[in-house]
Length: 451
Image (cartoon, rainbow, N blue to C red; front, side, top):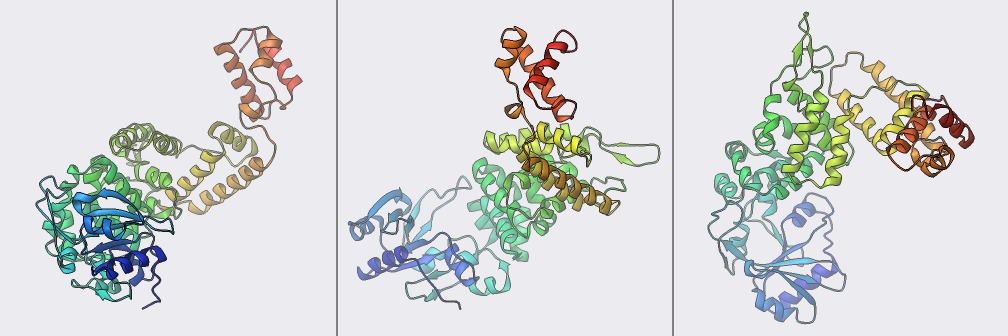
C-alpha cells in the first residue's frame, strides 16, 4: 500500500475524538481513492460520537450544523478545510426513494458501513491507517468492480440516484459493474424519475466526463434513456450513409468518448447534437439516408431537455450554440475563416472545432483523411487570424454608432445597427478595409441604397 497521508485537519479531528474515547475513521471516497492509488479530494469522517458529543469535543473549533438530525456536523479546523463528521447510523425506511424517513445512531462501525451504496465506498480507515473492510471493498478496488453492499434492489430503492452513481464510477474509474448489480441497475432505471433534476444533472455530467464513458453509454442505454427519454428513438436507428458506420445512438456515444477534453458543455453538446435525427430522416432514390434540418430540431429538443435538467442559462446557451452550428461548413480560406470567426466569436469557433473533430471520429472512415486535413488547415488559418489585429466584431470595427449618426445625420435606432452589421460583413469579406474614412464614405454612398 502507498504511504497514507491524511491531511493535518482530518488527522486532528480523528485524534480529538479518539482522545475523548470515541471511535473515529475517515470513510468512503477518500479511502477508495487511497487504496486505488489516487489523490483524495474530499475527506469524510464517521464516528461513534453523537452530534451533541461532537459539539463538546470541538468546543474550541468552528463547527456548522449541516445536518445534525442525520448526525452530520461540519468541522473547520486551522487548515481552513471543511470536514463533514457524521455519527455511526443506520437508516430507516426510504419512502420517497431519496431520503430515509428516520435515522438511528448506533455504536457499530460495521452497521454504519452496511447502509452505504457500494463496497468500494464502504471502507473505513483510522488515524494510523488501519483498514476496516467488512464487505470486501478493497478486493473490489483491486479487481475493478462496482458492487452494491447487500441487495442491489434494496440499495437502489433507497436512493435511485445510486443507479447513476454506479455508472458514473464505472465511467470515471474504468470499473466493471458486477453482474447482479448491473442487472438491478437496468431493472430499476425508472427509479431515476423520482430524483431531482439537479442531482441527476451533477451525476450525468460526471459520467460524461469519465475516461471510460463509451462502455457505459453503450452498455447501459436503459439508464441513459431513462434520464433522457428523447434519446430512445436514436437507439438502433440506422443512418444508411457512407459517412456513418454506427446507428444514431451509438454514433452519439462514440462522439462523446472521442472528445478527450474536460469541457462539460462540449460533452453535453455531443450527447445531444444528433438527437433530432430520427425525426427528419429521408431516403433518396438510391436508398441513402439524409437528415436535412436535424440541427434545428436537435436544438429545439435539447433546449427542453436542458431546461428540464435545470442547466444554468449560461451553460444552456453554450451547449445550444455548439449544437446549432455543429454542421456549419467553413472553407479552408482566409475570407471564410474570418467571416466565421466574426459570426461565432473566437471561443465558440474553437469549441466547435472540438465538436466537429469528435463528431468526425465517430463516423466512418470515408474521406476522413481529407476531412481532417481540411479541419487542420481551417484551424491554422483561424489561429493566425485570431492572433492578428484583424477586425472580427463590432467592437473592433473602425466606426461605431456615434460616428454613423454624426456623419449621416440619422437618429438612433435599428437603422444604425443594420449599417454597422453591413459594414462589418464587408470588412470580414475583405471587400472593405477596416479604416474609418473608407467605412464612412461607403456608408454615405450606400445609405440611400441597399442599406
